[in-house]
Image (cartoon, rainbow, N blue to C red):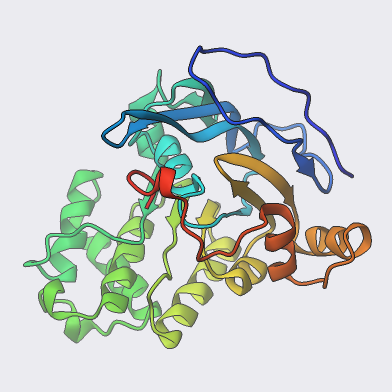
Length: 299
């Protein structure tokens, strides 16, 4: 089923790009409270020497079910990482609203922070410290008991392919793939209700990427967690995601399961039933395309 959204009313005087209809595929989320509700979210920046206004997230609405892996795809600078930062309270929303399990990200910021954890493409660590020390610090921040937290950290790291003998090596001496695995372990250690994975496998070697993907599947199957995943890897999105949203120039342009999106492209646009054709059909761009307007704040 395709739903065409009505043109929203203008809420602020700052100019915004002309909106195109949002094409939604598949049934709406069920009636129970969603894990995440995003309604008409908009975020603007002023960039460059000429102080140009740029709409990074433009009237985006989503309803994400509890327990699903929800993918957000878009070319570089499309607004997907800005959206993740809005959800995680790292940026303030200009208009619209975002709720995580009923908690407004602005009015209930601390409650939201306790429910979510975020892993970005450039994970932040104390790189002079070891994986164990970084995870122990995270455990203390979240009020976890040191003994059980260490046992769980060792289990998670082992599942990701990091042996216990490496736990005391400084992170700066470890590969980027190993560091990213530690970032994922740190996020899972706190048992988040909502896990935000912002390009978690970008730049990883093939073995590390497969390890991380398999672990994400395991988290979906064994934990009561909702996962929002942004990625540049279309095969990864097709493998992991229950539903996918495509973002272009800050706007939500299509949403559905991978199979629904591929079927739509094949039947209505005559394209090959692949995720590559889905991406090109709805965005007209390559995943590697850069958008100059957004490069200062959405990478």
